[in-house]
Length: 319
Ligand code: ADP
Image (cartoon, rainbow, N blue to C red; front, side, top):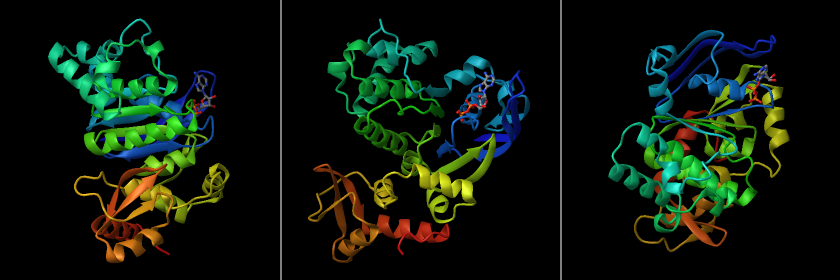
């Protein structure tokens, strides 16, 4: 879907920010770029929607060079979320969400329907929030609006540059959960920049670890943890891993929404895979609880699929 072929970027002062990057991001993939400050993450991201011109190489979206797209068509079809969402202060939330749909000449009814649907998806009651202005929302709520605004006109691709890094840990975790749910439902291709390894492990289908404008490792979260390619990657996982790697991350990734009957057995989201497996020996499914709330279920089928995938990747989730 998004392909980088020998892409380089040098700035006018001679800084080589990105050095012969080759990578391919699949349709519907949650692709996370991580690395220390100055390694070229933002430059890589902004080249995709032509906010920064390339110095060399080619970027293709759906096999067409980005330089061949009409710039408006390109930008409208790529949502963009920044660290500090700049909502328009004098416009209501509905108007803020509707900017790109209106540019794309959607009719009012469809636009309003979309705004309501998206507010619902991130747990903000449309009747309460549509007519508020940004200053009447908390920082976390504003950031939520920023995320759904980027999704409003139904773009295929969403670029996110450290979108949650200015938030407190609780809001941050909530937004990560929202985003995972949105991604599951809407199946967008997301390119997400962060310097937080916990965030990367939780959200990513694949993680691209960068250093000095180059890729150090590009792999699934499991692979990165189990087989870090070199000392840089190992150190990076280690130094950012404040809480200790545990399998909560994996559990949260494979949780499914509760659809039918509530399972009789409940287990904490911080349980290990072993503990969940043990329950699944005599239960068809278990409910996963976090902060006193059931956040979803894991059933036997999901667990088997997860373990099988992990084996294929050469990992060993269940050691
Ligand atoms: P990251 O997002 O990983 O922090 P950036 O892509 O912002 O990294 O920057 C990569 C490198 O390019 C850094 O050395 C940075 O100082 C440099 N850089 C970024 N923007 C500019 C610019 N406009 N002019 C000159 N150098 C820049």
